[in-house]
Length: 444
Image 1 (cartoon, rainbow, N blue to C red):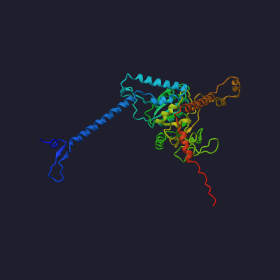
Image 2: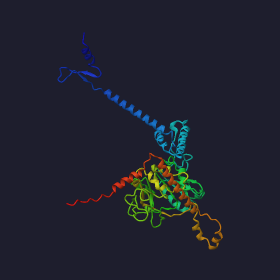
Image 3: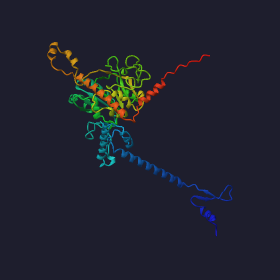
Image 4: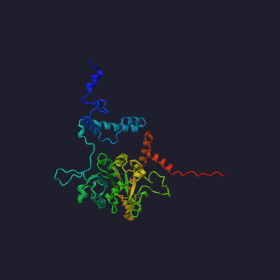
């Protein structure tokens, strides 16, 4: 009877995996592994199976993300529970409202198949039928110009809109005087979106009509006033510079000779293409190389800001729903710069504008309008109570500034896990610019 070892050797030789070598041949050991072409095919099939599985998992994850399409900020339950214990009663109430809205949104779409849920929209006009005069421009327009306007500035608005339309911008016009029909004689009027609300500011309009989910298809969002001269401004060149410089938030510089200047950092520097910082060692504002905040660096003014998509998503949340004048918000826009605000926020000098400083919202100031009134007429109306709209608007703006500052301070104090990136940067800057202590030599 053959031994078990001999039987195993015989059964192995000539099998699929093993081949019997010639014992007489030099270097032969008896058994050797065969090279099997089918193993390569098997390996390829296994790789294809893994790739298909990974793709299926990716599609599943993407579909699950559509169940909360209108959530502005997606926070994990763990983070929410950690934060909640530090919040005040009022903030807890706001969290409960937000959480309830998210829950309601999720419940409201559970009856839909996941693949049909559309989480975003846009501001593109769609044709009613295939051969309509209105063409689908969603593939052409990648940038948005939003402007708050009144019929009294029609000529200037016309010049601005024509410049931006020539660069394939989508245009949305917010009419604070409610006069929409007065623009119908302009050829481009039917190509733009018109929204009217009496005596509302651009931040009121922006908060309600420029939600990040609505403007998500646009790379850059311009939110401008109506009283800007654009003779020396080209939108296409401006965006090329903004992209090349890596700016997330910017504004065109102001012509120093003909503009109403509120802050020196916005004045055009004729020798520069872009500047990000103001150096001013005189007066109450001391701006030096160590300054890390507004109005010395990381700051733009509210009349002509330009945002990237990501920066606007942050800035939209910074707008307070009930504070319509936006005072104080400009001082915090640096937090939306997607990184170092001293680098990602800047003023573009080579493309500059004129700020005409026309105060049309609410009507002219009573002090200015009374200049054209005769002394006899002023004596007649002296006894009557006259409301100065501009004075009242300014008073309201100052009050809103105070409210905004208090809200910011309260939010900082109550969010114990929030770390101010400005403080981190301030420490680094002070360390870099710290003067070395003089070294005294010991006497020999």
